Amino acid sequence: MSEDTTQPVTPESIPEVAGEPPVDPTLLGKMEPQEQAQLGFLRQRTEQITMEIGQLEVRKARMLGALDATEQQAQQVLAGVAKRLGIAEGTPCRIAPDGTIRTTPEAPPKA
Image (cartoon, rainbow, N blue to C red; front, side, top):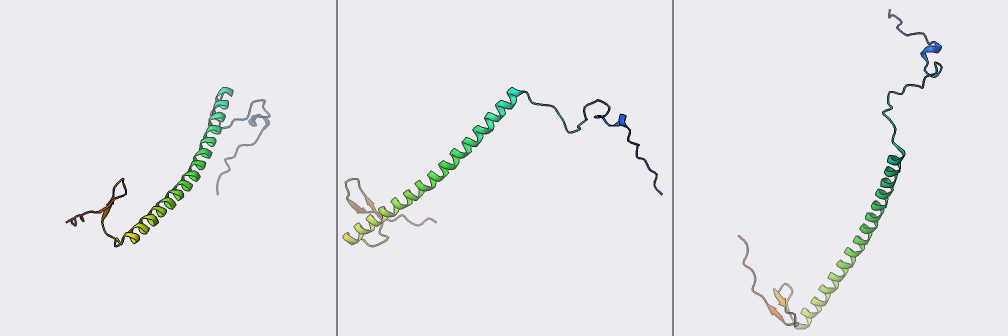
């Protein structure tokens, strides 16, 4: 049989009854009011920054969509020009700032 090793509970063994504050082994200390205020401000600022980042991500996604649409429009314009001039698809060419279109020699395949 096992031996009973429990201690009897008496009013003196209960800190609150004995007039002492309860002992909390997890208690490490307490922040100063200034530290609490500073931490509260920093947490609030962190939330604001996170919100701003979220808004920027949404704006970025919209801008990427606009960029894609613009590039597609440019490709449509180039395809129309190529069709009008009879330039075969895949023909290497370069467009000069004055609008002149010239063929360019194909680069040799990389070995």
